[in-house]
Length: 251
Length: 311
Ligand SMILES: Nc1ncnc2c1ncn2[C@@H]1O[C@H](COP(=O)(O)OP(=O)(O)O)[C@@H](O)[C@H]1O
Ligand SMILES: [Mg+2]
Image (cartoon, rainbow over all chains, first blue to last red; front, side, top):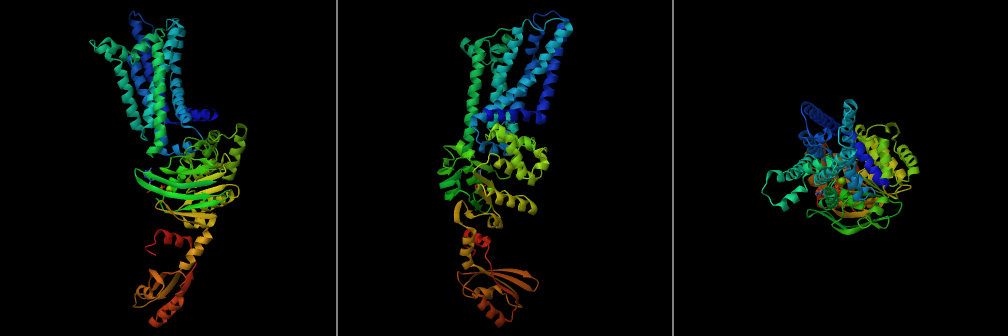
């Protein structure tokens, strides 16, 4: 456990030692700030049926930023260690492969969650200034943040897997970007193709991040997406572990 | 400490090491000597459990490096070639991190990190970013890292590569001192290095072990093969042609310095050709200013073993 904690803390610290982290942070603050501003000014001009918080998590801005950050967060995880050769001192220390894989995943997750701290303050500030609640209920907040966590875990695990496949960070980023975008659009298919069978629609519905976020951000917690995302994350991490072990035979 | 049996490693079918067999005993400083591409790094990486062998077996302190790799790694301090390090960490921060990874007990971390920092002369750079360190200091950080958990065995891959002569002397001194408490396997392609530091030498070439002995014995063997140096003004003669005709001379290398020519002769075991050379020189009216039987160095052993055709 202590080894895992040492690995994890290095992973998290290394984010804040790299310029990428600050670029992502600033980019993210900017987009989410613009998103929030637009939603609020839009609602100032007309009557709407939804809250600021719902609008914020279901806008184009949000999804645009959302899909982009995962490759940026995960591309360096393994690829950089392969490239610089630091994987050699790392793996010749008495640590297990899964400890390394999990520390990288959770390190990325911690950084990702840190990204989500500032937007939480938008809602608090909104409430302070306008005197109106930004959401229906506390459940809406926890719903959207729970969905952020679940989607984050799944997409980060895809990024981990992409990064373990190559020592080129750009290639890792492109692979995970394509995979995540593809999955994202898979969830949209059901809105576009109206004549698909209901079974297909149900299946595709599992991948529909937009739909899940829609329901969760209203405070409606459905267990199926929770099980789905947790399972998929575990599957992706198991694949990552597999690929990481097989590197020894590829050397 | 180390036991290697029939170790073979192929990269995409291309053999890098073939059928290696050797043992390193407790307290030995074993030198692993070979030209670039001989398979030193490959062997050491297998011993450090960084990659599995294609076939064969290796154990460290009785633990199989593949089956019981965690225990084997716990007994080993390994310094990889070129010492890859995280350049965004500070020296002490890195050593603290490595101590935790290697399972140094929490209450002993500060003491161990302090000790290795002292031993490897890292005191003055302890707060610096590793990325800003010179090659010499990076090498020392790698060595400090290898020593952190007080391993029984140290494996050092080319510990002096890329250092200046002063730093090389310091690192060698350090290794010699470490040899008093640790078993060491160190690789190098520099001959005097093993002569100076090692108690035993393995010579490896094209993935095969060519010799395994103490430096003294290897020198003893080669002394019989030996060499003779002649520096002479040979006038219109070619020199090398005539010298080759002397029975017992196997090969002549010529270095010209104006009128003076320096001939390095390799001679057969036991033959002393100096008398013959003197006679030849007087007969041909050569002016001689040096004629000596050269003390063989490991270089001779090396050339003899790895390029038998040119000898
Ligand atoms: N990752 C690799 N893939 C393919 N061939 C390799 C790899 N690493 C080393 N080799 C080859 O194996 C041989 C031995 O290399 P190495 O063990 O690095 O030698 P040394 O350390 O003695 O210089 C060389 O011919 C080298 O080209
Ligand atoms: Mg090498």
